[in-house]
Image (cartoon, one colour):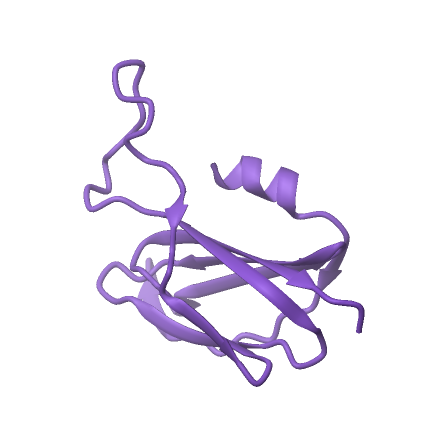
Length: 128
């Protein structure tokens, strides 16, 4: 799903994302970001975010004050079993689901990103 969502929704101009993320150490590398973010601006704005934390949800805020956001939807791909896969018998075991844990107020989007998850937020823009 992440590849399909990036291909279908990641249209327009890539936006520079300044991210303040919790970090972890892995295989001798220090300060590896738990939160990865990419964004595009086309007909709307699409935010892509990965929470790599194995233990914690991340609540984060996106500053959208440069945009006139009229509506938003959020989806998440995650599973309690990290070994879960889709099979011919169960094609919908791991799939995007609605993520209602977000709000927009005064140009700031606050969203909870579950641990070990792929997230997409689609923002519809007005005529600013």
